[in-house]
Image (cartoon, rainbow, N blue to C red; front, side, top):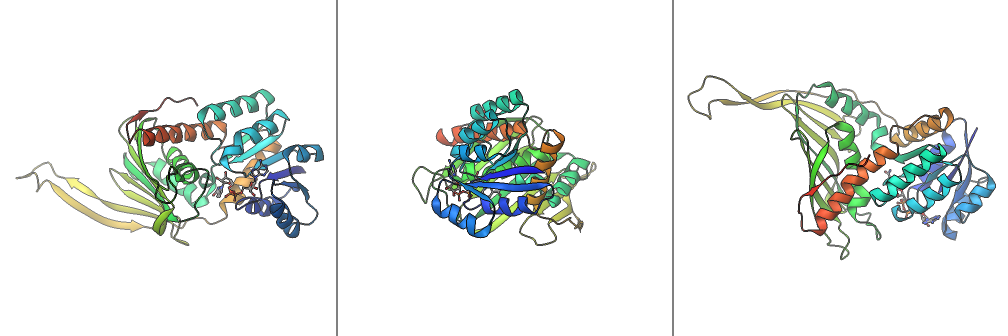
Length: 337
Ligand SMILES: NC(=O)c1ccc[n+]([C@@H]2O[C@H](COP(=O)([O-])OP(=O)(O)OC[C@H]3O[C@@H](n4cnc5c(N)ncnc54)[C@H](O)[C@@H]3O)[C@@H](O)[C@H]2O)c1
């Protein structure tokens, strides 16, 4: 039986407690939050679980593995404290707020031989896993470009920008879909709700070999969109998480060229073929994420979204942030993971 603690009982923490309480061979033994109201709410919802105001109180109570669901600005400090104490840790996305912090957490986990996983939730989404298999199978042909849209109205954060709140999901998806090495990023952001804290970001990543990826995240948008579009030289594919069932579409559309033609215009014909909607598997991504963490703790294996995966996302977030600060200037990526 793995004794699990959850730190942070704000918006996301209650989902984690619910999921871990439902997983086999694990017991949620403690919930930590620095706010009294949060602990009162936790106590009402989960009787019999220890309630603590600080990380050290949880460690004193005895715990094997901990999930950190506090704001990103606290991830490094709390993660480091837990790893130093010899605890296996799942940290919500983003792993930390800089590559430097991410690398230090990875080093601590390595030194103590602890599991360190980052909550890149979408990589545990069964339909996105299937989408990745389709993209990687070559069915779309050679990858040309892809773009992600994660926009809606609210929930506005007060400490991190939409880049650090929303884009970790999209960057982890992009890195999951392609192994290509990112070379250059540029980003533009707008702070319309709070000065100095971007609520809208458009960022472009150029990969070795020429693939381009664009990320659009926003808290200030009339639509709720959660979509990934991938265009290859043979087919196009869309993952739409707002669709209740038909989340994946493979579209046989493109521009075909013929060798014998009178004019350049004649050489190109639009190909409008079938749209295939493969049955997408269903299931709560957070349950798969939680179960995978427990498997890694039990079997002493490396998570699919390990510290390296967290750092690879931080490298791009950090570079996009630098680009936004310099008015959209291209920033080269120096990979550390
Ligand atoms: N995977 C997802 O889809 C998803 C969705 C939402 C949030 N998240 C992530 O979950 C984390 C938490 O987000 P949230 O929206 O729940 O934030 P939140 O602000 O609603 O809640 C954070 C909680 O942590 C508590 N807290 C802050 N510092 C603390 C400390 N040092 N010790 C103990 N408790 C502390 C706060 O009192 C608060 O109750 C973030 O990393 C966020 O990116 C992930």
